[in-house]
Length: 88
Image (tube, rainbow, N blue to C red; front, side):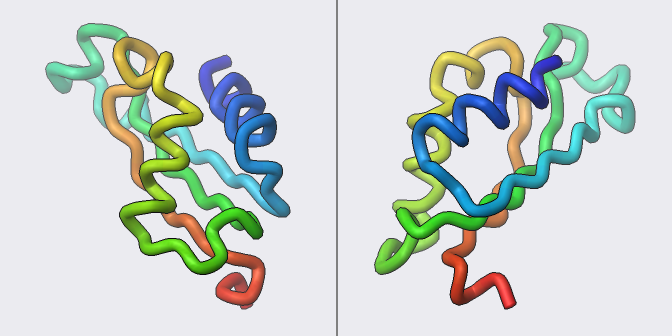
């Protein structure tokens, strides 16, 4: 369920060409963050909005889009943020 919410929020905010979300939460069962309910996710996102932006700026855009989820639903987030020309 959280994966779908992440996808919708990123779609709304960044209008990406591609989003792939991997939920690794099960691999972290028993981890302190998992006990509080936060999941572990890896996101690959390809979007024009990243063009001309540094990796830090790209990550900031993603964290901004997911800010309300970062407190509880997401404990860890791996990010691969690319422009369409980088996604070859």
